[in-house]
Image 1 (cartoon, helix red, strand yellow):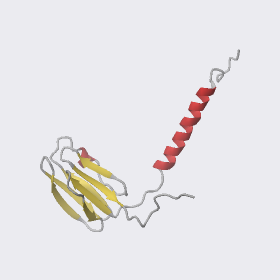
Image 2 (spheres, rainbow, N blue to C red):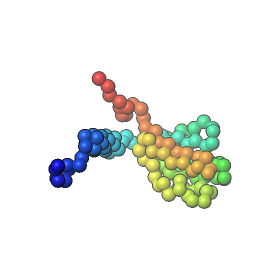
Image 3 (tube, rainbow, N blue to C red):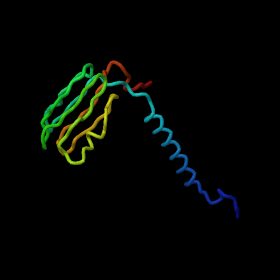
Image 4 (cartoon, rainbow, N blue to C red):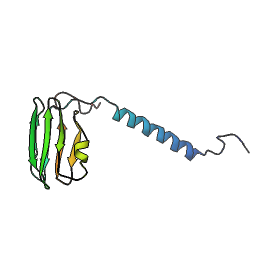
Length: 128
């Protein structure tokens, strides 16, 4: 009988450790890859079709949410919620969104922002 530190590890334990290490490596590679800058912001209000605004100039928008008026700020390359009538203000505290794929939502007001990049600027996937 072995009394070493790793003597109690079974083949299953080693397999679980190796799978966890592979998962951590894959997540690291996925989450820390460079993201493309956004070109547009899509604003969705309820079930209406999204409205798209270019991120090339500063503007302030007011949209009618379920609980009242919601103010959005758009500046070159970024967008954010400025004011919402909801209680917790989570959407306002989410701050500036600046990369393609970033999103924020005011769930009580049923308004969401999603940043979209120019599809021609970055590769979606490469296969061989």
